[in-house]
Amino acid sequence: MDLFSGLMDESPHLQLGTAAWLLRGFALNQETAVLQALETVLAVAPPRSMKTPGGQQMSVLTTSCGNLGWVSDRSGYRYEACDPSTGKPWPVMPAVFASLAAAAAAESGFHDFRPDACLINCYEAGAKMGLHQDKDERDFSQPIVSVSLGIGAIFLFGGLKRSDRAFRIALNHGDVVVWGDVDRLRFHGVQPVKPAMHPRLGARRINLTFRKAA
Ligand code: MD3
Ligand code: FE
Image (tube, rainbow, N blue to C red; front, top):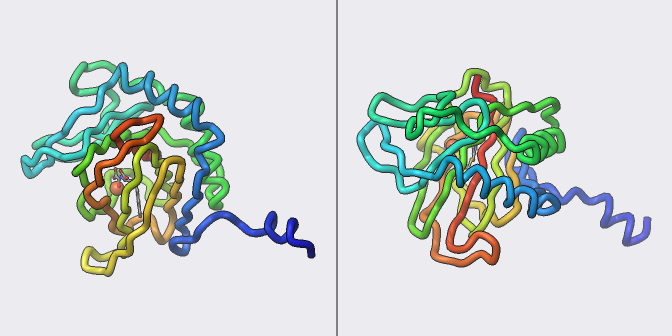
């Protein structure tokens, strides 16, 4: 085997767990289309800070697109068809979002992933997300696909118990992570984001989290 075919055979994907994959730069070949679609969604449904059921204001600003959006307030976490700040349906999930999420899932062995919810998390310097599990969805056999854009962050990837040791992994612009099956209920979080500048997104990190919620 020559050097070229050897390089081509090597998977660029990093396996984080039995059913968890990091696809470095996977979103970059759709970068411009994704960023354009993102701006359109953000103009209609601006990111806002939600309150946790415990009454704390989240440091991450959130919005959604798709049939269902994730919301949090004093009465709990849930998915809703309408944006509580306007009473109108969430913006339609852009086709480029849905196809990117489906392609990343398929690349990781999860075929026919059709997300109905895309949560958009916006991090400015200092924003963080504490260790948690994603448990507000109906069907845990469906994977979650996460797309990182803008400035980098350190992601915390834990175990099935909160007390399990978490390992740190740097996520950068264009990186896509897919979590499913036995890794679906792992604890995870994001360390406080360090101030930085991204040429296309400025001083922010934006994460798109695709889920099949219903
Ligand atoms: C690992 N957001 O919104 S999803 C969230 O960077 C959230 O904003 C992350 O966690 C962020 O709930 C990116 C990463 C993620 C999602 C589900 C997982 C990681 C996971 C399920 C199991 C293990
Ligand atoms: Fe999460």
